[in-house]
Length: 224
View 1 (cartoon, rainbow, N blue to C red):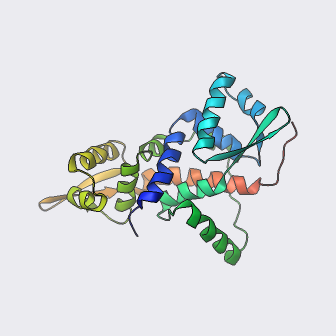
View 2 (view 1 turned 120 degrees about the horizontal axis):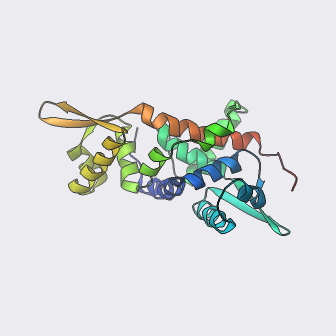
């Protein structure tokens, strides 16, 4: 398992940062629950102003998580499945640059046939905890997590693998430790850091469910 490449970290970090906001996370779940959704329906689902919803939708669009199509006076949003696959790939140890992941996923689907559809409940999507996603919004912290996914490592090993300064690596390890994503494990004169798989499982399943739901409803258009 290889450490996260700089290019991939640069693609993933803005997406995780965008999803660190609860409103944007819920917006993405609502958009992913159907083929496309009118902005009018999204606005009605929140107790905030239309301008606030427009701002959050713009962030999701600019980070490559959703697409928008204007028809008449309304804008319709749909999720970008390849972006969700890329996010889920980081948490499952299969993250690749976006242009590579698309062809790889297409080849796998052609060989394996249609993927099984996961049944999810909308309340589960809306109530998902964004804390782990927020942590991975920093490129260096995401790279550290990716390295630790390949096995426990010391601070000095992480410094060597990332090329970052020791205080920066230690600061990120502190945040990962406080969030329960990583735990220290003394071994002789050294302290190793180990990932807690369960802490990533919820975020990984959430992203996988969003991608599965988007596939399920890829041809389901709602009347407006």
